[in-house]
Image (tube, rainbow, N blue to C red; front, side, top):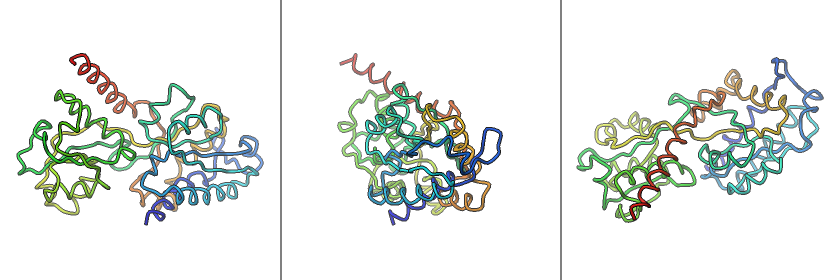
Length: 314
């Protein structure tokens, strides 16, 4: 099951690069024309955090399959490699050395390293909920829990930090607004939920007192089971927060950069592209806009401000 999910994800990412690429004026670049701007080794890097529920060995095999097909389809005589980075330090070092042509990573991870490397945000995916995710803190309506403070001494569920680090930052902000710096002393117990749907059902059946999940998952669950909508309530909701982002190092040739972007932005126009996007509940890929990062940037600033305030009080 996990390998199958990864393979679908790999196909999606590979497909946009397998589309006919274009020059700055829109004419396709193929074969020897593209060869002029492609490095001897074209490497695509992925943070393991966007593949955190996939076995690394499965990830490597699947990614290598589509990178080989990439070279065959584009007609270029170039070695193609896919590299999955298990930590930010490794990815950062590879970008600094000029070893990567495309980099996909969580937006919050990008913000941590953007002042250290020359990475240009290029592409994001969108769906019916927009380009960003919104997190919600849910409880049962009949639990008597109406505020974050009411959750003190209760059992709480969180997404894995490797999958949804930004949700942990948001929870810390919520708690610091209540004057609480340490979540372990605030809650009776904090557990990681394997999935959003499992967290929702745990709160629904009273196995947990509250949880943080993304709004898209909550709305999907409510559609499948209307009782979830009638019995669960939202105590707090985050601002929209961008998920993953695809960047291109500023050292990459401009023609090659535009070619990759063109392919990604036009994927939804093909039948295969639409089928791939349907698998992942994505309408299309769109060009990055700087304001997409505003939500996470503001959240991090608020976290740092509240942390400094609580530290001064000690």
